[in-house]
Structures are given as C-alpha cells and as structure tokens.
Amino acid sequence: MTDSMNPFEMMMGQAQAMAKALNPALESFTPKGFEALWPTMPKEFMEMTFGKGLSKEGLDAKTRLLLTIAGLTMQGAQNEVGLRLAVRHALEAGATKDEVAETIAQMAVFAGIPSMTRGMEIARDVMDAKEDNKK
Image (cartoon, rainbow, N blue to C red; front, side, top):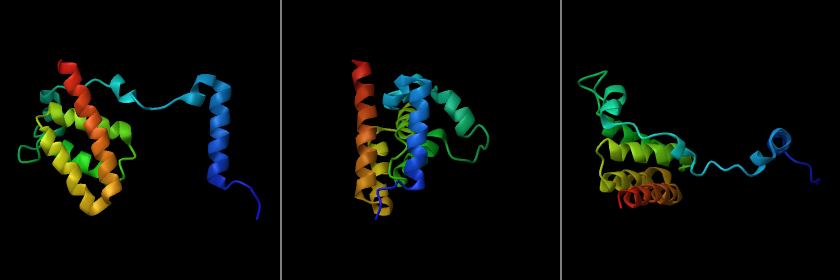
C-alpha cells in the first residue's frame, strides 16, 4: 500500500493551498457565526414569500420552515448555517421552541439519533442566543 491521497483529498488540499495563497486569513476561516450576517426576515415578509402569499390554500411560513428544519436534520444537520437560519426564521414566523424541538426529535426515527442530536444542539444554540438577546 502507498500513502497516496485519494482524488478528493488531493482536490481539497489544492483548494486549501489556493485559498491560503490568495488570502492567508482563509486558512482558518470557519462558517460558525456566518448566519449572523443574514438578518431575520419579518414574519409578514416570510408569509408573503414562503407562505400563503402565493397559494391561499398552501402551507403557512411557519409550517414550511418546520419542514425545512426537518429536512436539514434528515441530512445529518450538516448545513449548520442553513439550519441556524431556518430555526431563527421559524421562531420569527411564530413557531414555538417546543414545535422546533418536536420537529427535530421526530427526525430521530428517520435519520437516526446522531442527526437528531446534532440538530438539537444547533437549535438550542440559536434559541439560547435569542433568549440572551431579549435580556
């Protein structure tokens, strides 16, 4: 056996070297906190664009965002920024903390305990930050 890298490892190594050459600060870039750059949309705007604004018989914005949270959790909560944004916007659209938690907990049946646990950790972090901002 050799210690050669597989094609994915080689591609990632090349991308990291290129990023470092272009901007040395990118070497230690992490997306944590990146979602804070995106403002929380007002409930009315979410309802207009994601809710019943397009279809009066369709799902409301809160339900659509809870479904988004479920889908992101099903993917193993790998898209942390997307999940953080979805939780934040679901709360703004009227979802309760219990509804968010129940949505994520339900995904344990379909995605497994590790995905549900990671989703809960991310959601709890978002909800705790929201509580801290109220104080």
